[in-house]
Image 1 (tube, rainbow, N blue to C red):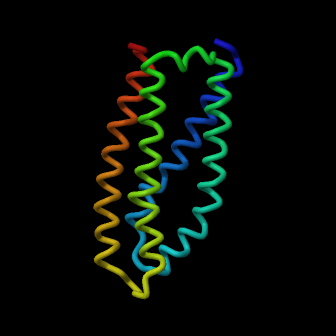
Image 2 (cartoon, rainbow, N blue to C red):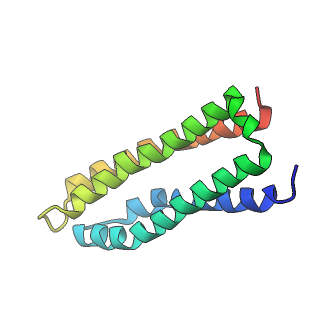
Length: 140
């Protein structure tokens, strides 16, 4: 295993953890104003994390071997990984933007629904990340 893989893995996993920090922030949002403030602050943070994930992911494939893409477990892992971020983007971020553009001050019903979505996506994410970890450790 090339020495350069370790820093790439550490940076990649750190970016994943940072990006998934949204699960811990959403339950604390109490009003439309807080949602808007969060979205303003999170957008550049999310964009940076996305770039780090793409660059380190490509670097991991490059230094590990492009031949890994021929292995089914790797393709399934990447697909599940992308599914996690698609769920976050469309189930949580879309709902946050909808609440942020609301004319309401508190939007309590919408925030309740967002919290339920957050729990559902969070649980599914933990399960999928567990499956990904298992696939990457066992390489079936």
